[in-house]
Length: 375
Image (cartoon, rainbow, N blue to C red; front, side):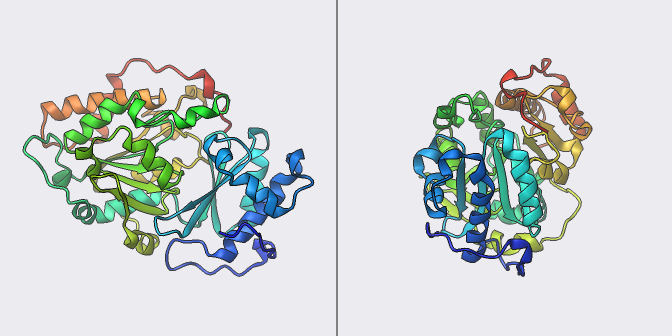
């Protein structure tokens, strides 16, 4: 990506050609960058005397990105370097305005909110629900890809029952960075997550974990590997950039991309869910980036671990509300694992069993730090 930004006509006046695979060409990428800069420049006094190239340099500076400070622009790429999507981080008080304007100007793209500050910009049709549908139609192929074999000690047979957990990362399997403490971003990972032990036990029992994150694969893989012993890595699949790419791990931690996914995923027909799976996420907003995943798996299999108070959660997600973020994820998985030990080889995530797991949990507590997340 060049730091010298070319100027193009507004995207709503351009002809959009649907790509044959998931990637954003350079011209479109530059157009998105220029639009983002034009939108946020009036809100940041330190940008007033800077040109677009200088502002871009600031937005993508490593310190700005690693601290999760705003404003920032995350340019998410595939393992082979193609641009897949953008995450624009802005102050919460202007996020809604930026979100609405990007939706208006980029009608051929998917514009979603994530967390308290992010606006995601990805190709139309790409979201976490697409990931669920792809696995629903290609589950055995994915198991072959990661060389999954059912072992004698497994109580979860992913090959037989097509068992998987689709899960968001930040705020779901490990802590999310909060604007009050941006430095926590570098500390929150699976290695120190309240859900670490439960996730490891689930993988040891034979389960498949599919991470569905709006973040890029590099950052997410680093945070995952801090809590993934070598022998468990092959059962974790990483779909990053909001479903734009599918990656898996070698034993040594090397991230490998499955390129056929980016070429085929947009053409996969939607079929009724036939896999034994749930989608877990903490973003309960209808406009949020987890909602397509909840909707795709079916709301009776959507498990919400938001820290928001119940009255702010949509009616569709209230029945399986667990709350407590990554702590809630760990508690829920503990109940699921109790069932798998008592009933080895049986399906784990039927709607009836999900209800029983949730009923067995203590009453949820909301997290006051994220009550202000806007809907």
